[in-house]
Image (cartoon, rainbow, N blue to C red):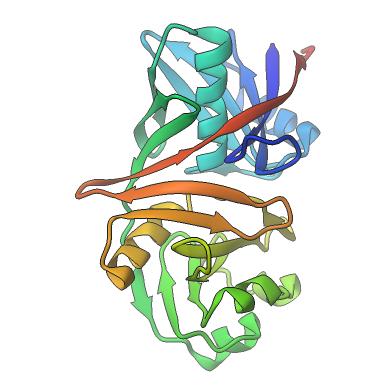
Length: 257
């Protein structure tokens, strides 16, 4: 099968978040898909398969399948638009999180994602001890969202993955604050994988409603403060979230199975 490695949410190589996009010519078993993702050893490997006028899309970490991934969706759309169906300006992906559409707007790729409203929860002593931090607020959805005082605290936070792994109710831990040169900033930690995700589109399905409520606005420039870094243009709509970013290809080749 053809495969591509794309850096998403950036227009510079070695920035943003890399994803491997595998173009399936036939359906493979979940076991084989998981083995390919493990072999690729990137935070996400996405598999796309043409289904009529749409594409089926699935996302796998090296360890498990995930329900929603922003950077790999953007990367998949980039490959469809530039290497497979070059005349298209809109693509629909059929996923476990519903049908996700992506529109090409110049060098930006605008994704329509589900809007996820989190639950405000109390920061218990146990949670604060595992975080190593006393948050201003906590929100819970698929991930745990930690509101910090300012951008410097987000930059300087050092995760203890041994402790974060004990927060078993959530897939990831997101720390966030109002930004200095962006509307808000964030970082995303994957305790199960013992790593920080460079740029996490899916977390913004929840971050955008949080910050829309806090800042009283609907359009945002968001920055993820990982070592690689990334920029996201976001809009909070009545029924969904729009997340836009750029992408650049790093590699292409063939997987021999």
